Length: 201
Image (cartoon, rainbow, N blue to C red; front, side, top):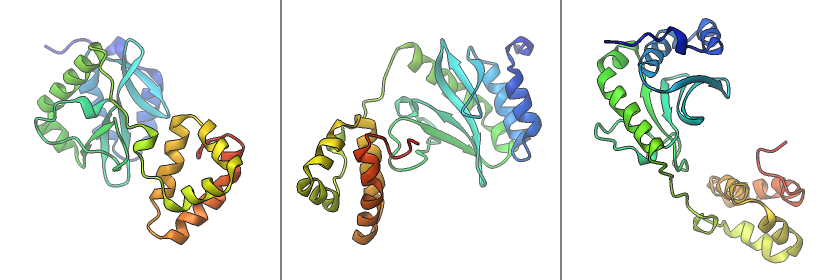
């Protein structure tokens, strides 16, 4: 028997659904599944987010081609149905389950509940994703050359937090041509010298 979820809903999520022009029906089905769990409904980063004791477990979001549940520690889940997807190749922890119709969600309801329960168990157990260290990321030769030639730049890069360092290395490495990598590096040097990350203002 389904529990009474009336007192579990968040007014900000109500407003989000009221404004949704795309995926509204799918969001409502996903919301029902998530509210039928011990997770608390919150609204973070402009999206419905479901947490356990203050820890974010799963997020609901939509794109042009699909909507999805994003499991924050999806890399640790047992993907028995082979439905978890990494949004990009460089994402280390989060995994999505994607949907293109309400029918897909209805057909997968029991599977989705099992994955949500698995995610709750992972969070309760305090499991953490082992992130790759900065030195395990590819160092583009063009950037290494600049670091070797400019001690101030090398010191500034090494003073950045590991997350900021990885952000720059991924940004530089994503360019397929050397000329593009050099252009990206050139544009980012002032930010590195200022001690800020790629996406910092």
